[in-house]
Amino acid sequence: LREAGRRLLSYGQIARGLPPGRNGRPVHPATIARWVSRGVRTAGGETIRLKAVRVGGRRLVDEADFDEFVTRLSSARDDGGEAAPAPRTP
Image (cartoon, rainbow, N blue to C red):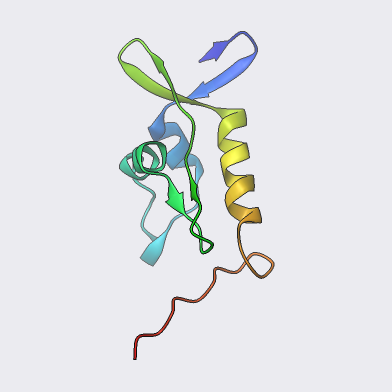
């Protein structure tokens, strides 16, 4: 969908455009929905949410907003792109 020069994507379109996740499994559209509703917590404790717009009964994501989301997540990494290791319990 294009609206006023914007490219709007469904959750499924975004999921299909991402590389496979754990164990080679594809990303599920519900993952994108969680990124919109709950966001992703960074190692520093910040929660970054993916912006979405409602068009009729559907929620769609502007391609530019998705790019910004990925950029913010990438820059939130502590050591040059690698996720901070989880703290070990005693």
